[in-house]
Length: 361
Image (cartoon, rainbow, N blue to C red; front, side, top):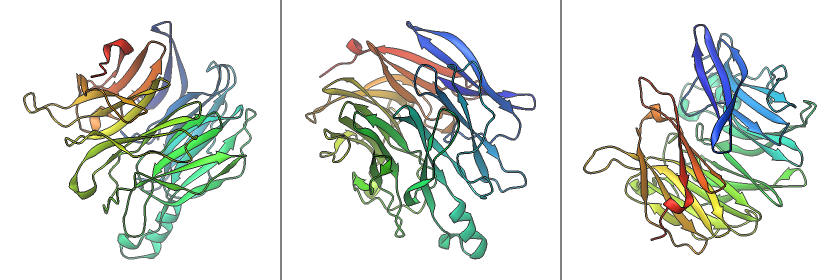
């Protein structure tokens, strides 16, 4: 678990380790001033293995615009006891937005993908109308244990500007999903696979044909189990907000027919995890309840044959930005949910949900 706390003159990135049913250890990655703090583009601390960890956070560019910020990345080879001097995974001098990073294992090393808006701002500088601006791109680099970084690859040169991407690692390698964009403002999701160090050409995921001239700030999530992959995402094509999911049995090469998880006007911000070989669990923020007028963080079982269990509301949660982006992982006999508490207190909240507490019908 990682989170950011405010300091008198800046911020601090902390982490804690969950073991044996409780949070047993807390540590610090970095602290500093001039950080870019945002509800949807947030730092991470990722344990690639028991000793090799990679962390990232966001730092404003000196003298830059509001959304001119860089990724700061640091490595630990002793399970978070010490951290390397931070450096960016991207070109240091490029102006614009560098964020929405996802870090993941790659054959004993680490990989990082992120959204970069340098081309977008360069076009903005030379055109009078923002509608004629350039593109955001989804980029990738491999991070070695010694801190060296391989050459950059571009997965997609036209993406949505602020929907977080996601990566899951199958037995055949990583699979990435993100919200892409066309010049006609179609903002559906795409998927790519890494094989032999190279990313495949992107293929559609869902293909709803959602046309929206702006970023919905609602990224997809993936989870892998062997060669099985489950994808979950939000769309509002044809003014129908809904959460959808689909399964792949071939390592993300192809996905089956999407399953409608919630069609009752949800807010989205999905999470997904496997509980066994035939069952995935989806989490998301629902629409407000008709009686309580409050949204909930909900869970639902989804089976590989396309059938589903009932929607189960767990806790009431704000559907606004103060709730952040809730997280979901499987841990042994249950699930761990994490979310940001409501203003003004905020705080990090977690809940352990036993698998046998989730109904099948």
